[in-house]
Length: 225
Image 1: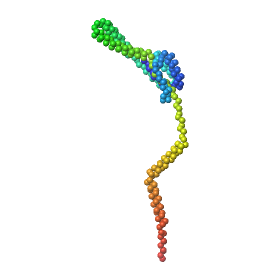
Image 2: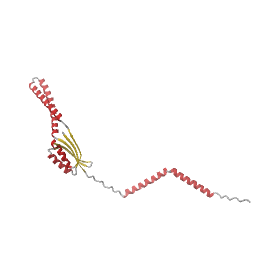
Image 3: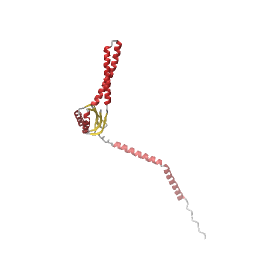
Image 4: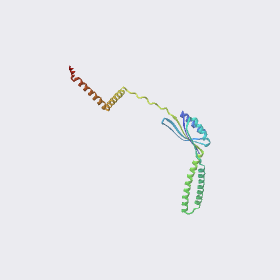
């Protein structure tokens, strides 16, 4: 079983999706699931593609023409052993079913008939489950899977610049002035020791000067002969 995961950026989503449908049809494949969203600035389409194994590589190459492949992961699973085991178990259960059917046709007693019918019902349930698993394996082997995420970036609209009124500007200026005034006041309070020292020094200097100006002048002593 072949499996691929591809993330592809397209310049034009409608054109790329139309090309994708054409590629899948030419490859003999089909789209088993698809979802489309527009979110987070992207227009995205997630698609599950089933394609015959012989066309798997060719389709991957063709996808490159839809845009820019940003991510691609490839993986394979070998289910040969599991397929053989399921097929063998199915054959065995069908053989047992045939044996119970033969016994049921020969049974005479009610108890024997009921017991055989119960066993036959259990075997048939197991056969149905095994057939379903074998059908799934056959489908997975018959078609490879490509998980494709195709996206295009959407244009982002820029918001218009807000219109500031004169009143708003006056209020903002008043608020800024008040903030400046309070900052100066807080700064002055933080410097109160310096201011106190300056004021105290000025007061002492002023007091000494006043004393010097108001004190009487001493007369000079007379010289003796």
